Length: 203
Image (cartoon, rainbow, N blue to C red; front, side, top):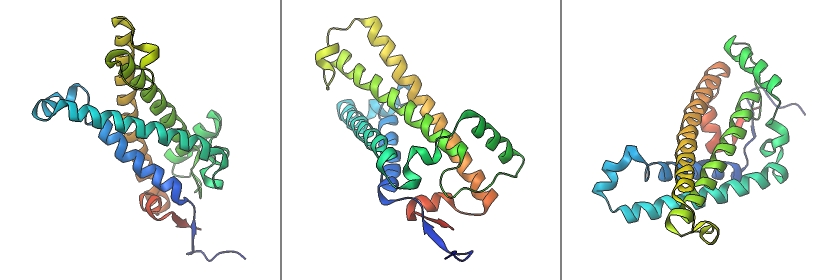
């Protein structure tokens, strides 16, 4: 039976929605409790407390990434990588169609959105890996402490620069993601942000 034009269907399952919003909160917590732009805030607050928040936010992100990797293979249709991970050619053609205001609507992630998700997940993975390495090498703490506790200053500097670069790169990607969501919402006249709360989209 064909659904009515104005009917809605469940697109984003509850676990994908929880993943999305917990990741938003964890990334914000991690980003705003560390780094040079926030030294003034850190000076006013307990630096040790902020470090704990930063580390546990990072652990949370690591767990979320592990879950999303698994869910990308065994989750519902629109959660699977096979549903939205497309090649560069398809993605670039879709971006061109978006700019020409003729991009087709997708019930799940469109090719550009799918590419953004993959890049975001990869960037977050590098950020977390470098952060765990830095925590072990510089502080002698965390799951990698046994491997990296005796690392030299040059290696620690590389980890620190990598961690900071990809954290900032992730923030830039988030900004691009928000622009894309807003543009697609206007183009297809539907609230994509709301859909990530309710799970529902127009059929």
